[in-house]
Image (cartoon, rainbow, N blue to C red):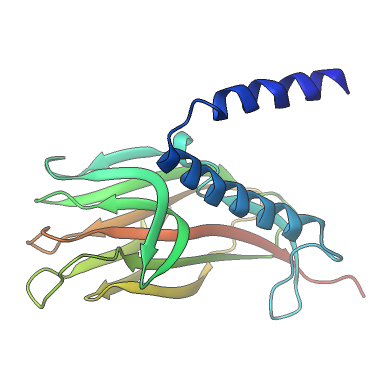
Length: 208
């Protein structure tokens, strides 16, 4: 496939110009993409622990650049980007979402859920990056809204990852708006908030 080889050669030429730090980040992201591909091509595809078959996956990292980013009051101090994050010494591909000094930081994903989806689940981790000095007066809140409705909230007061699976409303065949929100709760210092490998899985009941 000459066209594919041309693309590979072009990528290799661009990689040769990267710094050592960028090469490390690239290696980590390639590992994530390889893991994701293996999940898709493993026997039976994605499967939830309940035994339901996964027929659709919406990767929030993959669609990051399609999402809208807003601050509800003032964007000063807000930082949103895509990069690996180390929390408790464990590195994951992540969405960085440092909240602003005032108000909320909101990342707004818009998607259409396929008709054949019976159950929706959001798999993700939340963390505060290593090096942050959190205390009782500078905690960070993580929140999720779906179609404007508050669905999940968690208060983080230390570094490290915490894993979650959240059930989403049944939205088969509908447009959905999923919002990732961080809130500094009045003190944004050290609020190095990150979302680790967030993915929405659309599940269906196995055929009998």
